[in-house]
Image (cartoon, rainbow, N blue to C red; front, side, top):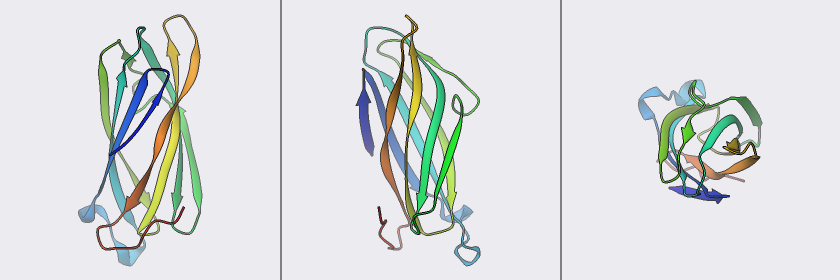
Length: 130
């Protein structure tokens, strides 16, 4: 589990290797990751955009940007949490992801909430190189 806090927004990520969806002979390894976003602040926040940096073991990086997450732009009230699960394929048996969510408070102030860097490793070895 990986956790980061920015301005009262706590982001926790739990990655899991998906052996059934991976095909090492075809150079395809797949992970799911569950993200939980908690609002520990005193004002509602809305997740407007996401930006991910996905890096494989050969140091190839893909940037993924877009509105919201899994088709939503959730509004998270103080003391509330929002969770979702998504996935990422790599062409190597290990890598890592990191990024940020563009958040907006009820008063219109926007800020980037850091998504903690997390490892994508298979259970069969092959340490991640950063």
